[in-house]
Length: 190
Length: 343
View 1 (tube, each protein chain N blue to C red):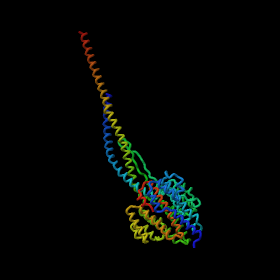
View 2 (tube, rainbow over the protein chains, first blue to last red):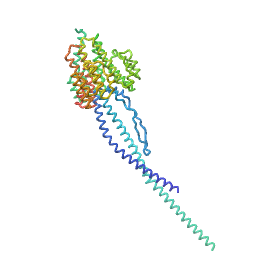
View 3 (cartoon, each protein chain N blue to C red):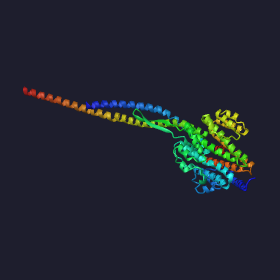
View 4 (cartoon, chains in turn yellow, red):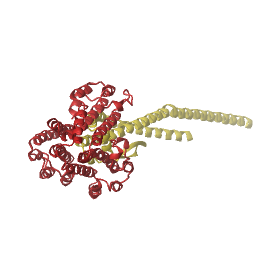
């Protein structure tokens, strides 16, 4: 009885794991489509970098470095959300550098373009990290399902079958013994 | 009638002018394969002493920039050491620009709550320093900076703190330093016999700086009232009323407001470039105008003290151009793009 209850539990757990696997796979698929944004962002980043090289060459390293001192730092808060119990990162920009203090228009323009792209780059990084964690979780769930399907459930089933066979053998033995006892006692009476 | 000391200074400047890099030098430098080749080429110029102290095979653009600006400082202050009297006063006022640039770096760092990087400072000989940079470099607030600037030529700084705090923009303080610098310089030209020519150079610089500030402010959409305050109150060919009008008008109105022929032409090209989003070229265009003007003054007035100021301006152009080339080489910028960035 105990084995049967356990088997029921394991089967239910497996169906829950299968649900989790399906949900993770669906989420993963939708995130994979979003990764395509990376190519566009990288192309944009390279364009900004090329402009920045010109600005840097024109203004000089010390001037650009010093100008960047005045804008303040970018502040980002990274927290964790959970999707099907998988921790995925959540990035929130709390403060952006104030570029209107730069003074130089070309540096301001390049800075603004980069600032516009930083949000997108962080989002792509978040998506990639989520994909990595979800893919790892998906492989774990798959391994669990496989283990349950191929090992745990067959083991339970074998054990239950063995016990059932054993019990039926014992029952038959008892029946035969009772029958024999009954036959002996009947002979004694006659 | 010029004194023997002034004539000596002008004659010496003629000699020093020949040390500046020529167009063919820039062409060759642009054609060099990498930073090492560029540094090797510079070993045969005025930069050899500093460059010979480091290995040219390992030289970086940052190191080279430091060497270039150190040379600029040496060139500027060597003329100051040769001068005397009112000329010395004037040159001293002119050379304060390097100190102003260093002060701006302090202000930016304090505004951004960062540590001041003293390695970025342009070297100013101790005896010509008006401020205590060591103390300024560890200042934590703008009030502290203002306190340290009391009893210096920049004591007005304190008056602008309230406005700085209202707008939370360090450009206000930087503009104030520029104003103090140019006003001081302009006032000292009064005492000189060649003042008209000298004022032509300095006045053009002021006008172009005002135009640059206005164009930049239009681009970042700064408050017009603030822009007016950021411009220098000294108009040479660009009258104060024109500057005020430009500051409050829109970008397209710039071309119709600036009437001085050469400025008007310059502004037409600049506005066109701004509209096309080619801001880097606008800056090159404006600085190129300033330096070309200084060059023309030098050619037309070889026996005037204006020649000395034209030389100082051209030294700055060389420093900027060499920095552009050094960074361009390190960053692998194409030769054609580099050419367009040179003043």
